[in-house]
Length: 217
Length: 258
Image 1 (tube, each protein chain N blue to C red):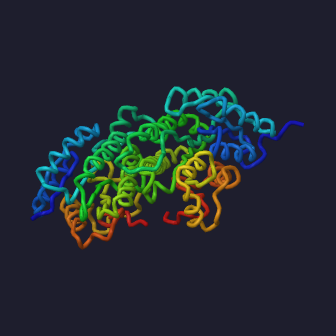
Image 2 (image 1 turned 30 degrees about the vertical axis):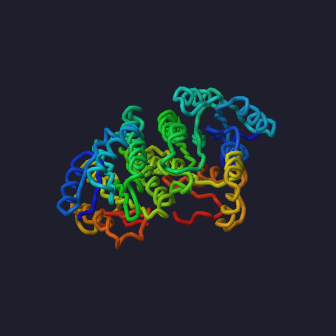
Image 3 (image 1 turned 180 degrees about the horizontal axis):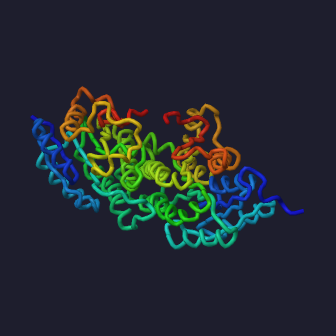
């Protein structure tokens, strides 16, 4: 039986990631971001998806936030809420809703841009949300580890999750060591590996999957 | 003889500190005032902040208190306006205030204190940045956010706190890169200090102090004025003029993961 996988997100990378995970044999149910606005709607949606799967072996939440750079001083409060606060609240609701469906061997993966760790001029709201979600992932690892639930963050190139305009936002002196920033298949392979029992002794860690750009710490 | 307003590491500077009535905020304000800064204590309750400002004035410092609920952008605007009215300019904005419940608990139970935490930390940082920016740009000043090691290592007991404190670090890094060309520096302090909030945490979690001391090489909890305050003085002074986007962990060495 394939890994029973619940994937949440919206956008091009998310769509492709779902397809790649299915191609790798995962049984995938998907969840739109709109259901995360309230805890109750998240619970309803997750319960339905989990019932279809039977259980959740792997939860993947993709923080995809396409946009153009806007200096923070020019950002409206509504945009700040939409790009920063709503995704943080949504990430919380998703974890809360999924917790009853996670058990020993389950893995929670958040996919965020590396700008969570490096900041991003013009995309401060996305970076702020992403780093908050990265901390939530670590806290979940600490709280749920004794129940056999593990977590991880996959940090991808900002171009993949934000768009081409974010290509120079990472502040890296060098481009990717592998010569490319990667794509959904690269991320799917790492996520697939994280779902394996062979990877079960890593939890709360961030796997930087950007072709060797960030390389920190 | 009049006091030399330019004396000290922060002579002639003006700093606004949210949550300035007590704890780490007051410790930072006191340390900055001792180094010559005029300080504005932004306090949610004027009855708490005004005596603290008065004590600073009695000690020969320039200080005033403004009422400011950081969840209100209007209050933040008023606090900055009062700073300009009182002292003419704004060189340092220190966002220290944090509200909402930080009671230990599981992620599944985060709903109760979460909105208050989000409002006082994440939203207030956004609002404070926008409100303070023109003045900091004019002064070539600095923006300082109080964060926590919990945001870097996650927290088994305070997941909501860890989340918002982590997010503030990414905001600081982003702003350091947006504002650096204008000469504004943006940094963070991750402190551990004996404060009224810490005392409440000790009461709720009796073995917390022992566990904290055990992991702290310096074997003591920091003092807001004498241990945390000088870090803020450094970061907002010219000594740190080439430092931006950074977090200084001031916790006696407890967190070494940065």
